[in-house]
Structures are given as structure tokens and as C-alpha cells.
Image 1 (cartoon, one colour):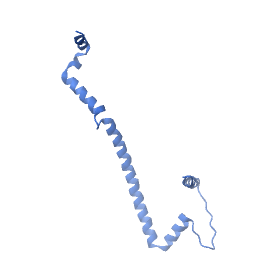
Image 2 (cartoon, helix red, strand yellow):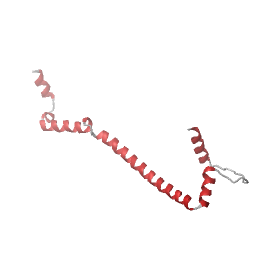
Image 3 (spheres, one colour):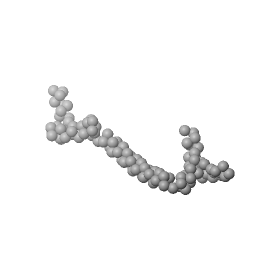
Image 4 (cartoon, one colour):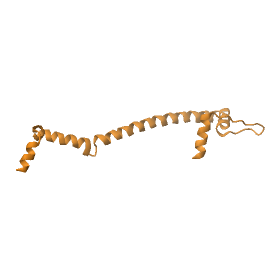
Length: 113
């Protein structure tokens, strides 16, 4: 008797076996499946981030290839690169380094790591 009273309290829409099956399927797809919508959303965000990283690295590779070509083809460019990046100088020269605040922060961060 108690079982029948409990069933009678359930709305008639939810007693329909087709509606109940659809509700269970939707819950399964949303929450329980290994490929549920929550994990799929996380994976799509991760994919978007990885594509952005890929674009950044492709641009960086092209820029580095261009610099390498310039360094290999001209001694003047090689000397300029050595002076700017490695602060090399000739024995009879004085070297004065003027840093912008952004460069100063970058160098400080590199030294702290």
C-alpha cells in the first residue's frame, strides 16, 4: 500500500516511461558519462589555449629564422647583435647601458629566477 501511495504522489508526466527515459539520458549525458558536457567544455577551453600557444610559437620561430639568416649573411649584423644582446665591446670603447623601466623589471625577474 505504501508503495502505491508514493507512486501516486509523483506527477503524471514523470510516470511516463518515455519521459523518464529521456530525463535519465539527459542526466547521463550531462553529468555521468566519461565524455560529459562539463569535461568537454574544459577540453575545448584547453584546446583554444593550445591553439593560441601554437600561433605564438609559429610566429616566434619565423622571427628567429629571420634573425638567424641576417646573422649568417652579414658580419655587420652579427656585430650589432653581439653588442646589443651580449653587451660586447671593443677594447678601446666605453659601454653605457640605459634601460627603460620595463627592461629593468625583465632583467630583475630573470636574475631572481
